[in-house]
Length: 106
Image (tube, rainbow, N blue to C red):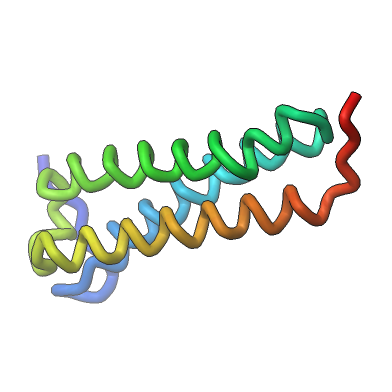
């Protein structure tokens, strides 16, 4: 089986697309749950579960990144910085969106 390659040779374009897409999908699910609840669960997603889920997904992506044929051009330090930045961005966006919802304490 041939390894998949990005459309631009030597760049981790496909790997980065997979990472961003996975993080976005996780955050969309979390925000959908928060929007349907708009109570303590939503606040928990904004403060605790959102950042924890982003950290777990970033760690899982980091664990499998050496196995992906389109990531070898990047050093491990750059992968950690990219995935850590995506996790932090996802957590901030989760908190901002949950904070902007009209939450109630019922």
